[in-house]
Length: 414
Ligand SMILES: Cc1ncc(COP(=O)(O)O)c(C=O)c1O
Image (cartoon, rainbow, N blue to C red; front, side):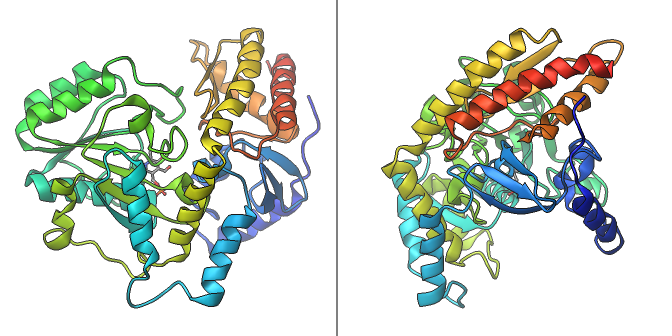
């Protein structure tokens, strides 16, 4: 077993925060989502593909803010564009600044389903807006969903504080399961406003899945058959799988889609785009407004991010890096001697431990991730990782070697 990291300051700050902030840190960033006592809780700064915690430990970061970082941390070109806007013009106004139109035009140019666009702040804002648009346009009520769509009442997985009537019209289907979806539609299709799915499957703590041949086309056909809007939740896949989203890569066009995360390389923006016949309800029938939605800082960041993604062919480079890493890790996993799966390569790598009847995986998983974080490789036990443009070949090779070492240590935990 390797030596535990010095996390003294992180632990101290966490203990202090427990008294003043419920749970100390928000939701998915809490220690139980990692390995309690082994992972840092506070980061101090980051650059490129690396983050440094408050105790001075530097990690190769494969979580990339749950996908918000596509190029790297502190990208000067993006930050400078934002700083220029703040200094020379300002970003928070009672009316809208012109950059909004430019960003909408850009999304309409690159995303197949986009004929119109609106901007919000978070992924949850975007998915909730998409649902409201679908309900407004179809004048139906029910929703069938597949995957994580955020923290709002209609879809949050933890039901505390949410009256059942706020989600009782929402049904759940599983990724790549067309029969299950058809079954739900047979029963409720007449009143189904929307089918919302993530075009890439990434159920929590389970392996990442690509669409089986015909799956996305099948979902499209079912939506059409029952007159429901098809929504692709591209919050994770957008600006990562392809500049036009997973819809572009897989050639299936939804009616409405949601984007966020990587769209502005870490600046807080979400977008809902879609076909005119759906989106037009936002003009007069369906309400969407918030004090900060039109702020231009993140619109500038999004435009600059997209400009760089296109100009430097970043997504192809990220895919190539991911393939390089994926091939190395694939080999390590094949030879590790444990019942482990590696999925999500090239873009969303994830090492999962298959369940065994004795529950050994419950010991192996935290042990493996403990050994990994001690070697300064930041991956999450219950969530796939991400590759970003600033990960170097050396970072990727080192990390694959550390994954091999971490497997090698597991015998000491059994
Ligand atoms: C597919 C998907 N949809 C929606 C969301 C919600 O986005 P946000 O956390 O920005 O509200 C997430 C966040 O992880 C997501 O992965």
